[in-house]
Length: 453
Ligand code: ADP
Image (cartoon, rainbow, N blue to C red; front, side):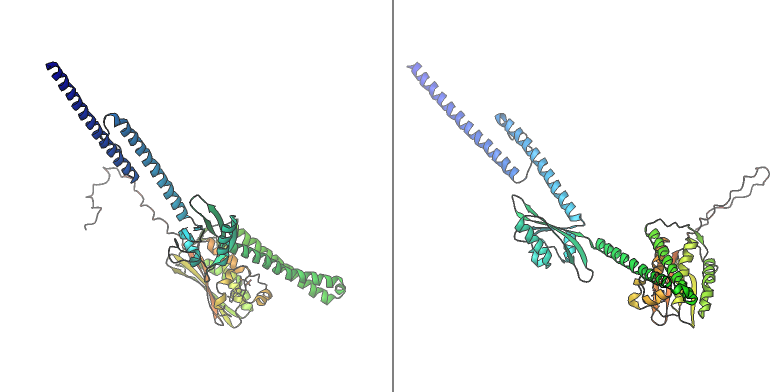
């Protein structure tokens, strides 16, 4: 009986223990599952952290270390992607080309500063319909074409009215899994187009300038051959015309070669300190006969106290002679021409002033362009090539100087050449006296070297 009782009690105790173990195990698993859920929630929110000690104990420890590992790798991967995104954004933002991304409903998803600036938009164009920002038909057509055909469309557009700028345009379709759209790239080609135009004009101008003397030479040579050779008076006259036009051709080609040497950087400048009074005197001497022959007064003035300028004396003389010859050419008698030199701060300024016909204000900046003349017939008649001032400007520029004009129609012109003065010579160090033998010189009481404050 007692044995049976013991057996029943034992069995009961066993069942009770089993129930307790069962409950405890269930409770433990729920706690761990909850910890795991919290950890994963954290990962979802971007909290990439390692499992804390004891957070996953016992059999769950391997789960904890796997989660720590995954969390570290995810953090590194996300950081890498963020770096890449920031880098791409920085590249696009700092590009000198205008870049914009437009979606398939023609709404701007991205636009860098260069794009905003090119299309003349006052504020950020992101999120706005393209048509609101740009009213340029060819640009809109390019975007629509790229969306419709899924092919890259290229073209050229011009923006701005006051200071028009030309852009090469590329509209390239993009189709990603997320969206379909167009990447627009605007490349500023204003300067390239300007240079092309300058080159075209230059070729046309040169051909035109050469054609006139060539036609004249050919015409008179044919007239001579056709019989004028037998007429001594006509022969001489025609030959003189041929000589003058050949000389003109020579002047044009000389000036063109000089211009191309300066522009190509092959012209040599022998820089040395130049004394302006001498320079002024030489130039006045060189043209005074011509001026007097035309009934013009001419004088030069440059104080001896003027600082030296660093320059090539021959090239500077060429510039001043050209300005003086122009002054003589465009000043009717009675009139006067003055060449003066003054010091102005860091510069010395040479001024050629005349009391001549003057230059209209609209032409004043253009006279430094190649072949630009205010009065073409007058310049040609005087044997001018229209290149003198262009060459002079290049030479002055090569001296880090500046050539400019002030003029009033009917009253006269003043051409200013400002040149930087030579830097002052460094003061010579005081010569050291050889030390005298101690016994020969009586010791003097030493003077304090510093003045009292
Ligand atoms: P050009 O050989 O025709 O003189 P330049 O280049 O020296 O060529 O000068 C360009 C133009 O500038 C001249 O054709 C002339 O119309 C104008 N010009 C230059 N200097 C003067 C001046 N002192 N007075 C009036 N017009 C001038």
